[in-house]
Length: 120
Ligand code: AMP
Ligand code: ZN
Image (cartoon, rainbow, N blue to C red; front, side):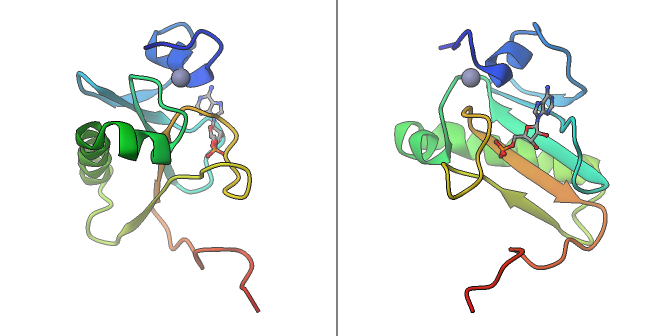
């Protein structure tokens, strides 16, 4: 179901423009407006889920379709050889800003350590 105030629901609906790189019946992949790497694509489900925890528990098959789309985009963008990072920011501590589940696909250069800060 679409959530009218949700930015990514509006992109899915075509109400806000985005640079779409892949579309399936259930998922959409588009370039991040503020890229943090040479390749930075967001992969979303067309159906609104707030985050990956809600999606993973609510519709595991759809979560798999999201991963399949991310893998296909990684191939299209030439990332499979050198590698890439796929991540879901979730909730406050995870730094999530848009509460419609999205995978960040990052690549095209070495991405450095997984987190800016170590536990030490
Ligand atoms: P997160 O912090 O994981 O919720 O990430 C939200 C991401 O959405 C950020 O990387 C933003 O740069 C990106 N973003 C925000 N608005 C847009 C937009 N209109 N089109 C594409 N990406 C966007
Ligand atoms: Zn939404």
